[in-house]
Structures are given as structure tokens and as C-alpha cells.
Image 1 (cartoon, rainbow, N blue to C red):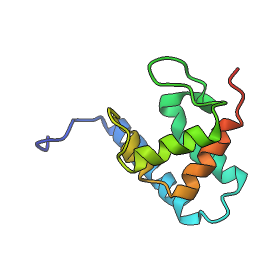
Image 2: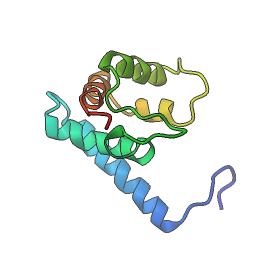
Image 3: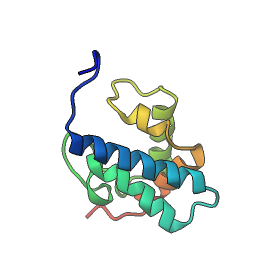
Image 4: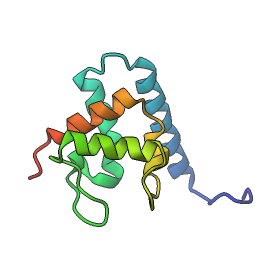
Length: 113
């Protein structure tokens, strides 16, 4: 084990590398952000926020929240302005501002229930 790193299984490592590869491919193609692309980007949010952002619990549901609020929060994470964050600051930095805006609009238009 490398000092300072958490051990992980081969399966977890493969999943992480696959996700990273997918995100890089998506980011490389981003220009007009077609709906299909935004939908694909949003799938990475399901790990914590549940399918379509509807998970209720310790991690907040994001479906149906105002786009302006979601966008402001995502930008705050990206700029390290949101205190007490776990991973969202690192995740948000992987997206352009345009992509974050598109994700905010996507989840704002998902019905909560």
C-alpha cells in the first residue's frame, strides 16, 4: 500500500477509472451541451444523490430545486467557497461553468416525486 492512500479493491479502481474516462470524453465533446450529453453527465450525480437526484437522506435531493440555487451552489463548490464539503468541491472542478449551469437546469426540471 502506498503511504497516504486508502486501499481499494480492483473492482472499485476499475469503476473509478471508467467513470473518469467517461467524464473526460464528455468534457472533450462539450460545446452546445445537447440534452443527451447533459443527461449522461448527470448520471455521475446518481452515486450520491440517487437516480435523477431524488435521494432523500443525509445527502440532499437536488431534483426540482431552482436552477439558480443549484448553479450557485455548484459554482461555490468549484470555487471552494462552500464550507464543510466532502467531495463536491473536487467534483465540481471537473466541469466547466457552462456544464455546471446545464446540470443545474437539468435537475431543476426533474420532478421531485
